[in-house]
Image 1 (tube, rainbow, N blue to C red):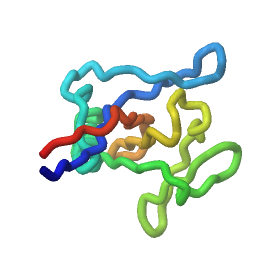
Image 2 (tube, helix red, strand yellow):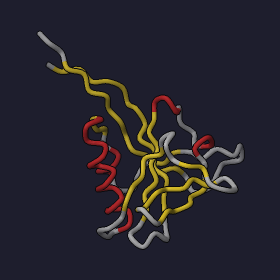
Image 3 (cartoon, rainbow, N blue to C red):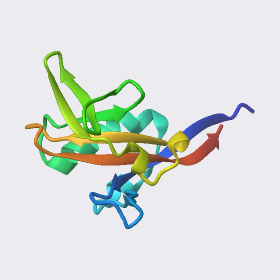
Length: 130
């Protein structure tokens, strides 16, 4: 028998304000549909749906924060929206209360690019199936 492995994740809101230690905690979503454990292959589709649900409109976007994201001035990250436009967001990556090697960080942005939210996809382990 050949077993297949699937890495699983769960999404969390990143708190809007830091705690007394300067760390940004994780919060469950009010909509329980986004508190489900999902497979790695469904992350992109699910984070896109979450961005649309969060801002209630089509045209919202998400950005995964990787090593490729440029750092701007005064503690900002520069998210490349298109060839001539970018969005600067506060760089709180090192202050989010997650294990970096077991998590993926995203920024959700509304269609008008006036609001954004941090979201963490935290590893829930590996599921094996046949």
